[in-house]
Image (cartoon, rainbow, N blue to C red; front, side, top):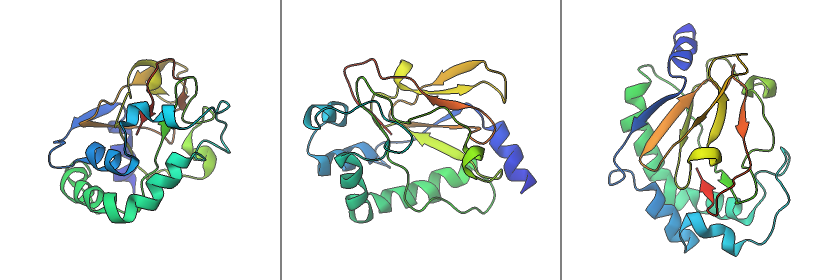
Amino acid sequence: MKELINLRKNLHTKSFYYSTDDYPFLQTIESFFGCDLDNIHKYLGDFSIFQRDNDQSTICHKVFYANYQSKVKSIYEKFINEFISKIVPFEFYYQVIPTFRIGLPGNKFVGEYHKDSMYNHQSYEINFNLGLTNYLGRAALKTETFPNSKNFTFLECPYGSIFSFDHIDCLHGYEVNETNKTMVS
C-alpha cells in the first residue's frame, strides 16, 4: 500500500499519451450520442450551475451509463490492461465504470472544490483523467501544485492524453467553463 501512496504522489500532474486509433473513446461515445461531444450542450437546454449533489444529473450521464456496457467497456478494459498497467507497476483494482463528466458552457463539471479524502476515498487510490473534448484552459481541472499549498494550476487533457493527480491530498475543482464548447471527460 505504501508503494501505491508514493506512486500517487509521484504521478501528481504527470501526463501520458496514448493512441486514439488503439483506444477510440471519442468516436465510440460520439456514435451513441449522435453528435460532436463539444457541441452536446446545444441539445440539452439550460442548467443552473452544478452543485455537488447534481453534477452527474444530465441526460448525457444517463445515455453514457446506459451505453457503457455494450459500447465502451471493451475499450476501457483494454486501455486499463494494456496502457494503465504500464504506468501502475503493481496489481491493482480499478473503477468498474469510469465517471463521466461534462462541463457545459457557463457551468462547471464538479460542484465544489474538494479533496477526495473528504469523501472517504482511500490513500492508496490513484486517479487518472482522460479528456475527450475541450479539456483545455479554464475548462480543465484546477488543482493545488502540492498538498495545502493554495497554489493552483490547470491540468489540461487534450484527446489522446491522460493525466494523474493527487486527488487525495490536493484541493481540486473546476472553474466555470467560459468557452462556447462542452468539456467532456
